[in-house]
Image 1: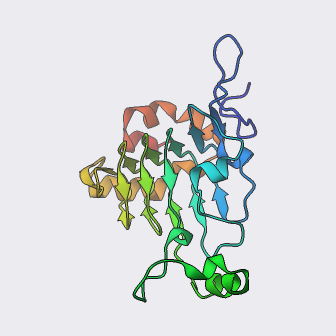
Image 2: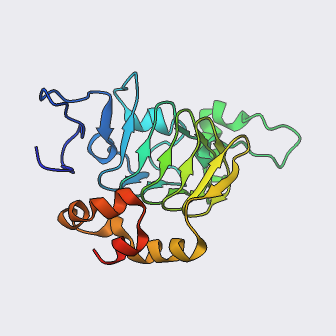
Image 3: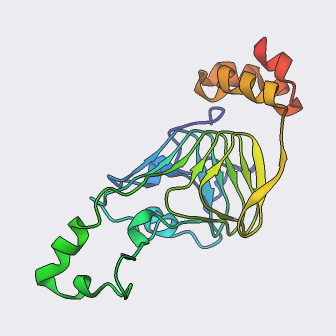
Amino acid sequence: MPFLNADAVHPLTFPDGTVHPDMVHLNRVIDHPNIAVGDYSYANDFDPPEDWAVRLAPYLYPGAPERLVIGRFCQIAHGVRFITASANHAMGGISTYPFGVFDPGTLVAYRDGVGALPDTQVGHDVWIGHGALILPGARIGSGAIIGAGAVVAGEVSPFAVVAGNPARVIRMRFSDGDVARLLKIAWWDWPIDRIRAALPALMAADVGALAQC
């Protein structure tokens, strides 16, 4: 099997030639008009679903006002959920109960009255740990690490490590200068052969060496 085969449904093959059935390239198993996933981004689930879109983003229906956008080379662990903006209830009245959705005559008007909703965006090479919850409109920068069980709202800076509820920055993976260099290098956009040649620098956290690849 070719190195990092973007066309493979299951990206991990064991030495005996069997594939790991719990891990999938998301853009090979999700066909949803409101979800966009870059190449090589995978999810792993101990109980693989038939519908990965519903498992990851259960409130995001086709034609919803918002989107879920995930970049390239992201790694999504078991139990991660994206609670997209369509899960919200109107909060302008006395009650938040969605009365309108239970009457076929008012359902469409209720839906259309929600208006524009924010997209949920995940950059490139983001690792989202076991059981993390990504809230509506979250924007996660490239290279970030989301700790297991974290509850993420708002913006996560590129190459930040966040954890907790609410998620807070534990540390930055690189200095401000190196973060700027890495975002300019944007290795995740390189051809796969160049990425393979650059693996020693990528695995060694050597920004200078990566810049020379």
